[in-house]
Amino acid sequence: MNILLDARPSVGGMARYAAALLSQLEGAVPPGCVRAYGRKACRGGRSAGRRIARRVAGFPLRVLDDQVCLPVRAALWRADLFHATFGVIPAALRIPAVMTFYDSWAITHTQERPPGRRTLYERRVVLAGLRRAAHVIAISRAVARELTESMGLAASRVTPIYPVMADSVQPDPHTPERLGLKQPFLLSVGTLEPRKNLGVLIAAQCAAWRQTGVPLVLAGARGWRDESIVAAAVAAAPAVRLTGHVTDSELAWLYQQASAVVQFSRYEGFDYPVAEALRAEVPLVLSDIEVHRELAGEAAMYAPPDDVEALKMALIRRLEQSDADRARESTRAQARFEEIRSLGAVERYVDCYRGVG
Image 1 (cartoon, helix red, strand yellow):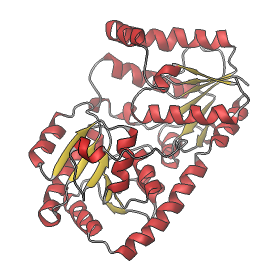
Image 2 (image 1 turned 90 degrees about the vertical axis):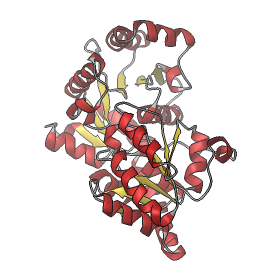
Image 3 (image 1 turned 135 degrees about the horizontal axis):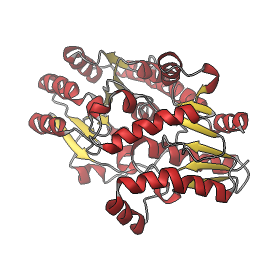
């Protein structure tokens, strides 16, 4: 079976998903049986010509890439199966397709996305992809439940498979000097955008700071509709520190040295930082949403996503936790991460492909 995987995502969780899956697939199927559309984007950035073309042509080039170039490449390579990791199954595609569905936010909360025709287009192609897909991979059981209970997909068309977890990255020892950080610190990871609920997190951290004196590091690139988030973080200094985008090796150091990781989104489909914190055995404070409970179980403290006071108290309790309690949670974290890794094994993806092909 010749598998064509869409490797165009170049930033964020989709890029991480596509890169790790491609790397693992290349070792799990016979040589030459998997190819990537947009491989350069997955392996370290587009060529200069492609970047310039995207700036000049913008949205029309995106549509041409999705709806014309991709199915032509599938036909030229004689692909038997297409894996849509970018939410796009072209109307002209003439082979079965498996689609990864990350979450419903882009469909249900377009008002929180960047305004314009690209956002509306992405919503339409995702909905069309769900109709065209021979099978849909949900990145968590919570997302699978959404697809079947809220969006009406037949359970036989949906399989929950966690993302393949990439290999650990060596921490960069120069990170504290480069970012100007001192220990101890709390850490939250992710693009600055409304659903990350950073307004509540910053307010709770400012209240906890008066008692703990431990700053919160927000590690992540600027996103969309983030002006109020940035303003709140700047006003909260020195209780809150923005780093901007960090490299994988810098992020590995941050996980290794953080007193706790705090992820307080209102909604997530998976949430990579939770899995990565479990792997690093870092204490967790999480918003009490379905997918966080699914991933972390008893290896985390939880607070309702709209409750500033509850989060403040959770931050204080976490920093005052005894060594014995930390050791117990470390054991739970190890077990949870191993379960996540096994439920995201590349063999489960290959089985899904075979069931469709």
